[in-house]
Image (cartoon, rainbow, N blue to C red; front, side, top):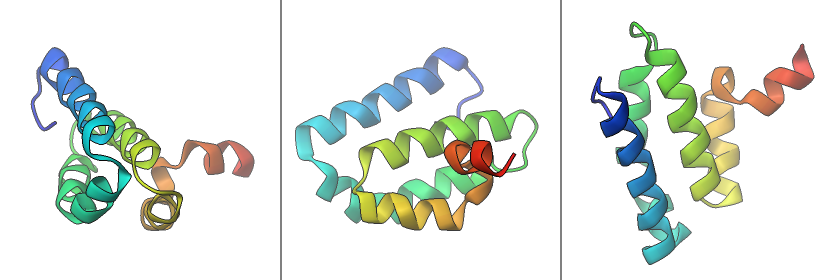
Length: 87
């Protein structure tokens, strides 16, 4: 997910979706802290905010609702639904 190559980045996100389908939300929830490190590395980097938003969107779609709520509180800048309501 940290690759600057768009195709590699997309394949990484697609792989996350396949992992969730194979192993379930519980596995994503168990590994979310490790995964969030990727999101944090993208934050504020050149072109990274757009990628961070896509990573955030993917993570919140794949994890449990409880974990998604936690991520939305931790990274409100990437919560597009909340940002639409605020604006």
